[in-house]
Each structure stands twice: as structure tokens, then as C-alpha cells.
Length: 308
Image (tube, rainbow, N blue to C red; front, side, top):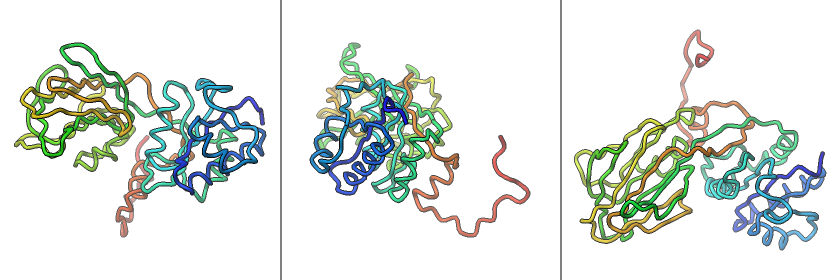
């Protein structure tokens, strides 16, 4: 193995199981002649828990983000979203090991950790690209905030007791206005996250599309919609709103929205790359992650599977 290969290890170090898994991965990388790379947050926690790890590289110091070959992520979907934030803009794919609950974005489970790292070292994985969102906040036609999201951008009310008054827009044209708790604008990847909890449709990640799902709307017509990936979605916080709103992106990045603010969401040109260890179908992933009942299924007679 070449020591100039750089693999970033990202873990939920607030959980003992995740911290132990991170130490195990670092030791396996060292045993194969690689120097593990850690972010500042992980470095402090992991080195405090395991004094025998040496050498370890610090991201942003001896290793830059563009030097990374792969990111091994240990935790749930929240940890994977944080890793996507760390690796934003580089070509390194994310390989998730689920230590959370559902772990929809993860590729393997804790009991397969050693094999997962071995396959990562052998570069024995496929890379799948997932579309992301470009998010802009405008006030009086001026862009005051820009960010991105892998799962969703959500416009929400800032006060529990106040309803948010919004108008939604598709491709520069108004569609409907209503009071609500908020509006979720999602990617297909995010269709199994917040959008799903709000009653939105599950969209296969092989389909590029944008979703808009109102949260507790007070309206006769406020149904979830799915539009082209080339469309632009917008949510305006109307002046009649009593209070203010707030923008959340992937539950990690936030920005306050005054009355009159406008949130515009488009497809981002920068995808997130996920490392996959198998070519299993998304249908199987849904069944496994949500423990869906499929007992009694015999399969289509005379068919081997989906057409190419």
C-alpha cells in the first residue's frame, strides 16, 4: 500500500460505539501502511481515547481536502451529512457504515466494518453520484445568503405559536399561497428523510427531480409536487406573516428569514459521491431499512428482473 493515499475518517465521537469504530478503522489503515486523516473535531476525541495511534494526519494541515481518495463515515445519516459538508467540492466518495438507527445513506453495518475497510483499501467499490441543491436567500432582490443541501432545504416558522404565511413558486410563476409550519424542498435522496416524514413521495435516487412538500398547510390545495431537475423552486415569506421564518439546510446550516425574504432552490452543479459495495436495488434498500412486509411474494413469473 502507498502512504500517499489519504482516507478521511469521520465519526460521531459523542457515541462510544462510533468512537471505538473510528479507532478500529484508524488501526486497520495504519496496519496497511496508510496514514489516517482526521478533521480537527475527530482528532481531539480519537487521540484522547487512543494514545497509540501514530502517525495520524490532520485535515487542512498536512493533508488538504483535494488530496482525499475516500471518506469513511461511522455513524448515522446525520454523520454522513456532516462528512458531505467536510468533503464538499472534492471528488472523494463517502463510504458510510451505519451506527445509527435507519442509516439510509450508509452502505454497510457495524458487524461488517473490517471487511468494509478492506474493500475500501482495495478500491473495491462503485461510485454513485447524488444530486444536490443550490440554495439562495434574497431580500429586496439582493442575495444575502448562499448554501447547498444534499437532503433538503426547509423554510420553517421561527416561533411555535405563529403560522408562516408563504407563497410557493415554480419556474418564476406563483403556484399557491397558504399558511403552514413550513415548506420542504428536497432532492430524491432527501425524499426518505424530512420530506418523507411530512408525507412526501419516495423518489428513486436514479431519477433527477426536485420535490416541494408543505408542512402542515392550512389550505385546500397544498399537495406535494415533483418537478424537473432543471426547474427552480421558490418560497417567499409573505409580509402578512406574524413573526419570522428560518431556513434549515440538511438540519445543519441555518439562516433567519425576515418577512419578504425569498428562498430560491435549484439543482447544484456539484453532486455528492457515495461509495457503494454492491449493486443492490433501491427497492431492496427500502425494504431493508424500513423493514417493509414482503412475505408471500413469489416474483414475476418468467422474468429475471428489470429491463436494462
